[in-house]
Image (cartoon, rainbow, N blue to C red; front, side, top):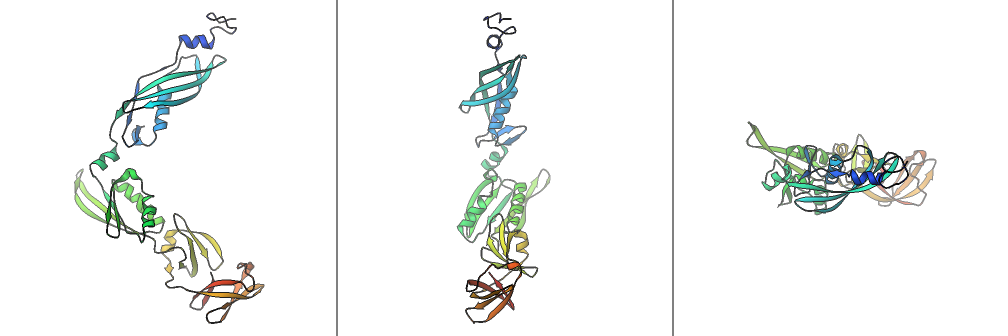
Length: 316
């Protein structure tokens, strides 16, 4: 059999001739955008512009019934505050014949203000994060954890900054996040009036850096930990078994900080199975320490640091 239009051998009308008479088309459609870059997609404002365009491209492409679409890819040709112009690349099957074609598409842009931007432009806020760090680096570390979509404004104040947050729900999420990182959190509320017939409170959240830092020693359940690394995860070395592990900041906050730790220079004077002996280079006293499973991995003559807490001695 041959194509009745062009004479190409095949089973009836060929794919090329079929597409000439049955073009793929794109229905009129629109997208709602905010100036911040959010798109109103699936009933909410989200940062998913590419996903929204892909969804509109697939939903509004009119495909003849005899074509089975296998792949659809789009390219944004141009975009302004009124229109978005696309080129949609379509691959699929017509009968048993593979096809590839392109469709030009236009999407109308509806400009609206999302809820977050509406609150920010109206200087609206429900909570204030009061950050009182010990140095500028801690301020940056904290701010990097806060989604700018929820920030109404940032104010410099004595000893820190105040960050005004649009919703209490997001402020509570921040409280949990900072607590998990070991920050000292205190909250208070101030009655501002009525909202939807109910008392409306503005929440103030004081955030101070963790009371521990790298190099600190903390006692928890009669075990001594040295803080090796802080941040979203706190890495500590257990001085009893020499094992380095992640310890939750909340657990560390419950421990007792060793104030003015007595750390001294020492030297390993002898190593024997199950035990090492260290010499304190300040008072020349020697201490015998258990060395189960060769946990210290030290050699005689090696210089070390020791921590003295009462009658207990640890190799740092």
